[in-house]
Image (tube, rainbow, N blue to C red; front, side, top):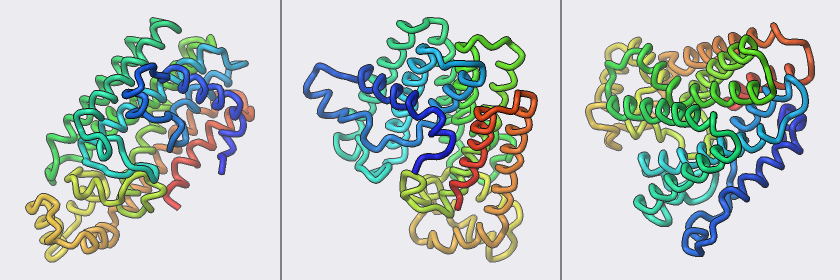
Length: 322
């Protein structure tokens, strides 16, 4: 079912999908077989939606915005391929992952290939956005590296955790909002406001993702649940629970970490402890706070259906938990 914000830009999102198909069209038969169709299992295109809605806030959506939205989505898909390799994920969005079919090496190279396609397309459309996409990817890689270095590290501070999710997720949201506003001709002040809206919404989005690892269905999350937990990603639900755990609960959580996610410690008991200790509730409260801050920024813009759609995006981010 389409969200209300998607209905407002339905035709533009369809054009973005067509552009993605054109950009990623590959002549080589072997590469085409590996890559498959970019439409297979595609997600909600939230990054493209942010870019298009921020552009629409200032008038008609220019063609350039749809081209850059397509590039952003291709980059996003490439990062998911790389994520699946790192996590050894076998299924995403109900379909087998590229690495599970073709192996890690081929999947890694195809992810790289897609990034090259996106950058080449961006350079043709407007070369000034190549450095922005490059900086965005650098931040994302930096966040992933910091996270990887802190696997099973229960001493990771909440502040450092927030830095990780800002780099790996929020920066991309921020960049999409910035691009949308800029290509629509917005002045620097509203561009800055919408960039901050995107950053805050991105933090909330990742917080919800981290909650869903404990509470969600695989169909909602797009990948197996408890994946982060088993890979040793110290996300807010776990970190908060560790900080408030005592006696048996603490022993349980610590033994899980010391066993590097060993199945000897039942995952069910760990997730139950995280619920009981308030890790989920606290994380959801924080996600709501970031969403509220993002929506508050929109109050300085005229009250239009597009502003309402950007507000709805905050609701969509939180409603994924239901």
